[in-house]
Image (cartoon, rainbow over all chains, first blue to last red; front, side, top):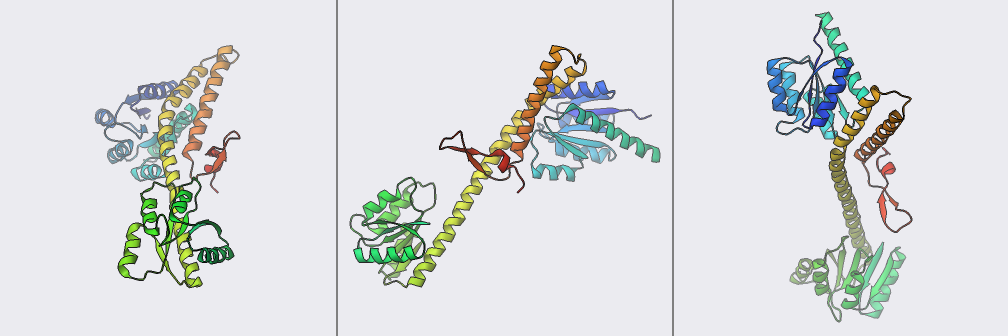
Length: 129
Length: 221
């Protein structure tokens, strides 16, 4: 059975806490990082299959982080969560490998639905192996 | 389109005014450079000026230079009326800030064509100004929305989280619901602002001042 682990990356501590709380309540194992660099360190220790990434991060941005994650884990499902989505940013997100994006403030049900959808897809692919 | 005609000779002024009127322009006149300067410094002055080169008070060249040094909200297209055909004189006029010349005695077809060129340029400048205004507004709104969406996420998200474990019949549930709904409304507003693609205005509370019409500015058509 697949380990339902999620990584949340956002530089705002209150948002990290919120997403961790709601996704944990829904039944997932959730970890959080405050930067892309911290996220990559966590990824080295253990793989995650589902991600919620803020785009506007200090240091490496969310788009670059997505590219890095996809290189290491092509099957991972990565969602962008952004405070402001321009047409340019959305195009960059698609090109970087994001599976979908959400604009803050996101309804919690959208987050939990996205997580459920991600694990359903991963389960399906897993069964086909 | 309004045009200012500065010409000291009464006959020439009358003839040119009549010609411009026949072509559908609204004409304002000045009898010398000083009057032209005052009229062109007014708030809602014309965007196209036809200035005689030689005038009492301030001549066309000096007036040109002063007008170009003056900060203006909208571009002023300047045509000099001149009997001069010497290259150095014409260059002096261009250096002073004139956009074009009409030589006396003038050909009416040429006169009309040169004015049409001026109008095309003015329209292009005006479109560019509106475009720059929109860009400025979009950049500002993007920055504001980005900053607002973070705390809005916190307010909305934690309200939702608390509501999950509350008794729906309780007063606190109702209050928290209202907080959640209000923050969602603000979130919808920031999304509308981020969807602005045009610059549409509407009057503000019956005053002379306009504000951005968010509904029309964020519609696709």
